Length: 276
Image 1: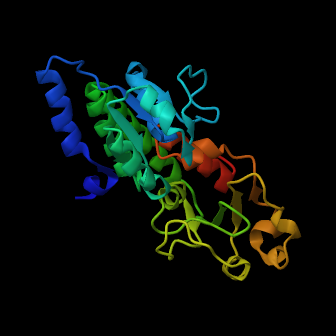
Image 2 (image 1 turned 90 degrees about the horizontal axis):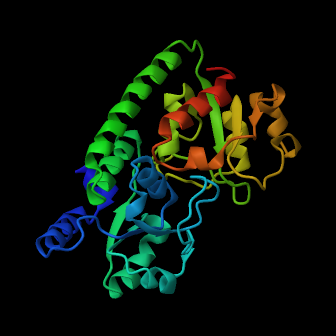
């Protein structure tokens, strides 16, 4: 039942696509992606011809020439409507509020929200089915699974698993908990997330909690924070003592649950351990 939570509306979409085919309409639905990770999936599958518009991809994939219909949290519904899509891809959480206005325009909505690596693979396959690139999706997933197996062998050779604090925001201090796919990536990279016991995927925590749990590595996954070295009490942590504060990370790579997931794990291996 996990895939049902990861990608909803597929049953209705399958019927919708079948209806299009029976009516002699195009076999490939016209789509708009409001989710950068879904945009990456579509391009990775070579299905960009099915894509009418996207939200700002923020630098990746490069060289996209599709109309921009706004940003992740603020799409322009007039622009979307003008493109006459059959289906719009959204994420859950913040984007759930877009369902009603999109459906009121007669547009089908597919919610793509993988919570872990296995669900990322499932999302790739389901998106592939929708845009008529299922064979390509299956091939891509097989390749990613092979690369994941190789990466796990690299991690098996790591002698010591280091504790990690993954910072998404400083004010408020937001990190990743048990329910986040990033928590799984940290574990796959041979790290121990110091907030993995918190059920919320993106909990707000106190500075005291971080200092008391004493991470060996701090990963700054945002661009506007102060250096932990200057924060009250943080000098006590092993990360600050040993200068293991990682700031030069590719945020798009780490924060998008998409086809670059193995590259993200390998980036974290290097960030946590200093080598591959």
